[in-house]
Image 1 (cartoon, rainbow, N blue to C red):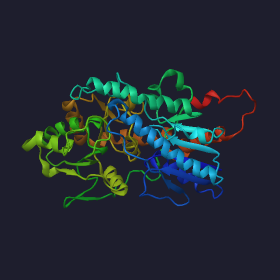
Image 2 (image 1 turned 30 degrees about the horizontal axis):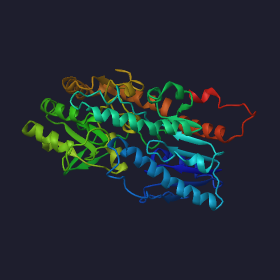
Image 3 (image 1 turned 180 degrees about the vertical axis):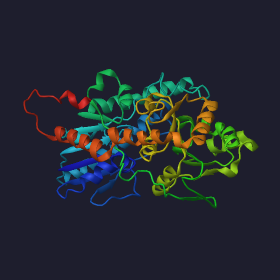
Image 4 (image 1 turned 180 degrees about the horizontal axis):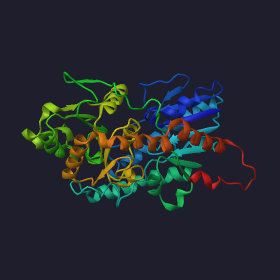
Length: 419
């Protein structure tokens, strides 16, 4: 089968799927991306280049839309070259958020397009209004409403869609939800597992499962993932647990939400705010850690904190559960789909710093009583998100049904795909 994948950050959510597809030598995989510094064996990667930067004269509401259009045009230019060379995919699979898939059906109108619809951007409710410390201004709402046009164009263009969780699907307009399958990209629970022998060397000290280790991981250290709440809870936590160490993974960029003035980061902002109240010698910032190091961090974790706005559910929470971490998470919508308090994790109100300190203290004081919760956490991931037994079979099934010719002229995509 011939596959055309599209994602600006190669390989994005398609890493596991492509690893599976390339095992079959009969499959031909072409990947259009903006990222030039990664490669995968038996994947022909084509790096597209946007023709020009967004114009300074473009209306501020339209700049991200223009950026999406420029990406869509860049993808189309490469697709037209492929078509001229005789390449016709059996299916096109791409992420919608950056406008890359918008014009592909104009190149290959009779080729099915499976769009990845991760999150529908809404100007009211949800993540935008969630945190009173960072309230949106009027322009934030109107910009987001305008940017939603890219989401709608993608939904109107794709033949079918996928999204990782039921809650994320529910954020899309009702009229489109029946064309979006709930398909998480999967957690490799064979690779991500507990390891009582794991050791982490950090800042000249050695940490193991025998130590009290509080872990936190995010792509970037920012309010959308509760970094400010976590940091403000640390002085009380470290005072109550004098032997505990905190290991934090995440960069200083901003993936989502409000950017600080140039040169400032949320990490520096919170460190300045906490000052001498924080025992910084026991707080270890690792930045963007290699994946192998990240797994060791999960494996030595005594308690793992995951906080999030009502937003996209992070892989890191599910990976922490698969590694049998004791996860303390915010009782926000995406988390509630996975964690039941006291069963496979512990829940707190997102803003409740005192409760976070109390629950961490409780876990560290009674580690043996938490063993069953850890086991259930892993089993929950295996049951619903396991890569090889759940996620890949579902993705392959949807792809095969999209590629298969319709049985009758009036046949439509069967509704069971939407479950």
